[in-house]
Amino acid sequence: MASNRFNLGSFFVRLFFAFILVFATFNPSGYSFYDWILKGMETGFEPLMAFAGIVLLIGWVVYIRATITSLGLIGLILAFAFFGTLLWMVIDWGFIPADSIQIITYIILSLLSMVLAIGMSWSHIRRRMSGQVDVNETDDDLT
Image (cartoon, rainbow, N blue to C red; front, side, top):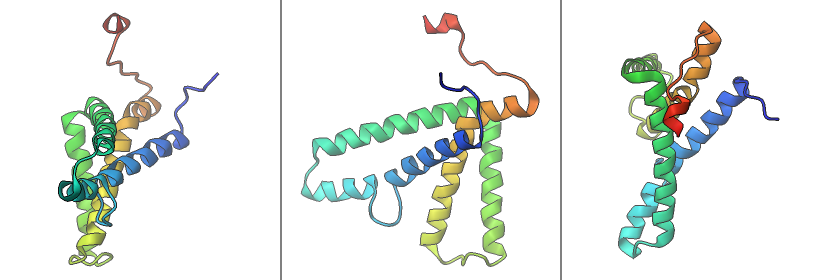
């Protein structure tokens, strides 16, 4: 029987899939769904492009819905503020050159993946920290 226990490995699985979702959708390397669609506008749109787009859309809906439900508006604002100021500090301290758009883009995409993974995991993390369980659906909602 599978364990329902949340641990660091569970978070990293969510983070791994968030990275795949974000970087498959767009990244500065030129190998992403975004770039594929741009090339498809010149050569023709194919069914595989539509299928990949639907798969990515499903992934985004699952992650965004779970993140919004778990963190809420204030939590999202705080998460983006936290990671935004962290990026600002790293640039201000000179660890990353401010004119390196490609590196900053990779960092922003990574931070977005972190927010999505935290959002997917937050209910478990909050339960661990506080002992409180939050329930979004009841058995009556499922029937």
